[in-house]
Image 1 (cartoon, helix red, strand yellow):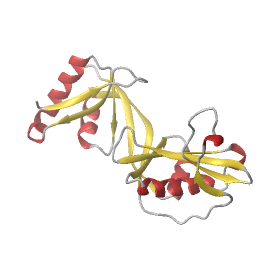
Image 2 (cartoon, rainbow, N blue to C red):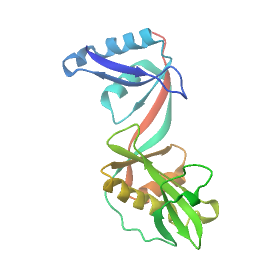
Image 3 (cartoon, rainbow, N blue to C red):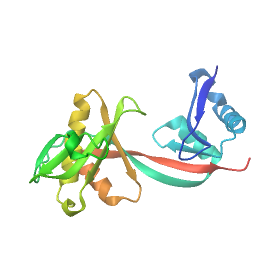
Length: 194
């Protein structure tokens, strides 16, 4: 075996999502990648700019490039105060219709923000997410809950990371205030003609 690749995605069928070669075969990475594409019938791929091999394959083989997300890594702790309310673990009564997020900020008996982190697809990272209720936005609650979710992520033995849509300036600023800084981009595109 010289390496492996993965073509899957329930949202983008036929997308190359992963590709690795053994170190001693890196010189043959591009022809091996082209064989993967031909054998799998893949029509598109994605690559993170902070993953050199995938990025090289992407830039050599893909056209019509789109920036889907900005990727964030933790740059360190912050000490933001809670503008109002209390950060706490969610309970079943908070979100009776579904499982809901793991953490909330509650103010005056109302959940004003929620968030958590996902660990099912990118170990050892915890992908941080948050949402602030519309009437409570632009008050610092988003950055505060991200800060606190980062803390509990570390306590769970994970490394906090995040992503947001490249056009979502408000989310980007929220993540950055909480100490998460851009570290790359998630790019996507279709394969060029040979």
